[in-house]
Length: 166
Ligand SMILES: Cc1cc2nc3c(=O)[nH]c(=O)nc-3n(C[C@H](O)[C@H](O)[C@H](O)COP(=O)(O)O)c2cc1C
Image 1 (cartoon, rainbow, N blue to C red):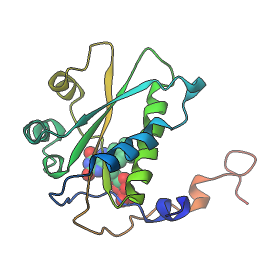
Image 2 (cartoon, rainbow, N blue to C red):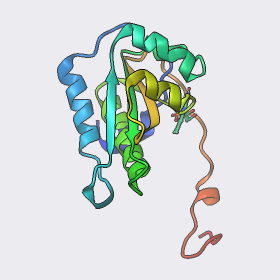
Image 3 (tube, rainbow, N blue to C red):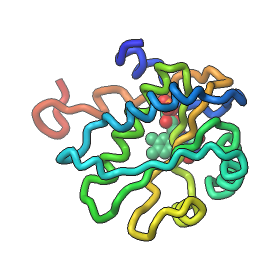
C-alpha cells in the first residue's frame, strides 16, 4: 500500500477480532514508530505495549469505559517527558506513523485521548517525571467504518497570509 492510499483509507477502528498479532508484524509496526522524525532527533518519547488481558480490562474504567480498550490485541501507551519542549509533538508524530504502518499491515488503530492520566500512569508504573500523552488501540479490525467528514480545505489552509484563500 502506498502512503497516499494509507492516508486516504485509514479509519479509527473500535471493533476488533480476538486475533493475536504475530510478533514479527508487531515489531514492524513498532519500528515505524521508532523511525518517526523528532525535534533535534531527540526522540523524546517512550511507549508501553500492553498485551495482558487483565491489564487491558483494568484500563477500561480509566479510559472513560471505552469497552474496546479490552477488546483490542495490543494497547499502546505513549509517554512524554514534560521537561522536553517538543516531547508531545515527538510522541504525536510517532503514533501517527504507527497508525499508517498498522493500516498497511491490515491492522486497525484508534487514538484514545479520553483517559485518566494519573490512573493509567500509576497502573503501568510511569515515573512521576514522565506523563502519559495518549493511548492507542491496535488489532485486526472487525468493522469497516465509513470515512468521517473533514472540513473543506478553504477553512483550514491559507496561502501567503492568514485568512487568504486562493
Ligand atoms: C488526540 C485524539 C484523541 C482521540 N481520542 C479518542 C477516544 O478517546 N475514543 C475514540 O473512540 N476515538 C478517539 N479519537 C479518534 C477520533 O474520534 C477520530 O480520529 C476522528 O473522529 C476522525 O475519524 P477517523 O480517525 O476514522 O478518520 C481520538 C483522536 C485523536 C487524534
